[in-house]
Image 1 (cartoon, one colour):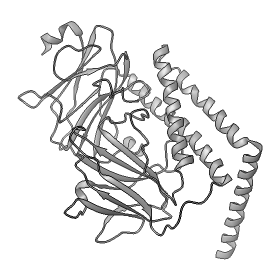
Image 2 (cartoon, rainbow, N blue to C red; image 1 turned 90 degrees about the horizontal axis):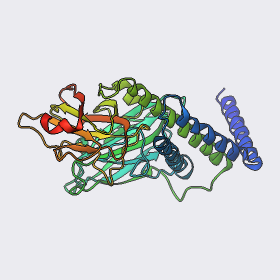
Image 3 (tube, rainbow, N blue to C red; image 1 turned 90 degrees about the vertical axis):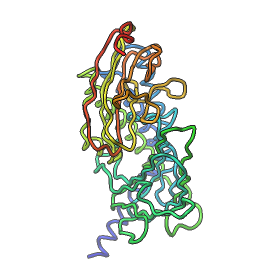
Image 4 (tube, rainbow, N blue to C red; image 1 turned 45 degrees about the vertical axis):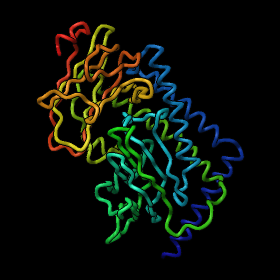
Length: 383
């Protein structure tokens, strides 16, 4: 019976390989990818999307950025037998309210193998590593299969460590669990002060690997282009759905369902508040809250497409380290188009609307922020 099953599997693999070769030879692999990209552009023209040229231009740029990261993820660095840590989100690739304080890394992995991460802890405020199944464009199960934090790691006196990634437990070692359908590793390194902190230096390798990766195969390219196309469509649609949902209650900051955040590969120790802001030229938004005891918190502004605004040139976020607090521990954040000369001002960076996010890590409570629109001219009276 086992031999029959193995033979059928071999026949199916051979058929898929022949089909992929045919698709490469007649150009269908590339044509289908290009057709999918054209369909992905429909998200910018959805009825719930902004109708002005500025926001739509950012929408098309967003799609171009997703194309870039999708090709890296599914074509260039897609082989779980030869994983490479890469940056899936950064200053010019922004996805799903990406945190400006984060240094993101990711690698393609598989529950079929075991891996080893070697690292030196550095001084970055928070380090978290998670294994995940599925992706935004997949119809398969999507969620977390394991998680480990820097505070949980066994390290030597120099801050060096090793982590075993496997489906089977690794007693006595730093173990990051996987499951048979695990497909990716995501690393979040969170600064509280980028000017003072050093990220952890990490490398990953497959246990038992020897020699360089093999040559590109037709089936790898065919499936890689299809996976990239699905990711672009799935990611853009998912976060536009979120944004449009937030827009139904503008200028509020309700708590976000932790189960939805987890399915979208969120950090299990973070609680999120997501909302939509929209301001006239002489309006401002006040967010008031007494942050709970927690390891970290931040608030940030994003555009409609849930990309963080350009934090290279504008102050669009603030965290627990940088925020100016009142004597009673409360914080008042000001979102406005121009600097009012008051603490905790966040720059809209020429945007009239977008999403916003408040998050905290390992909070002992989850207070509800107060959000209200005020006249810009009244800001000083409010403070």
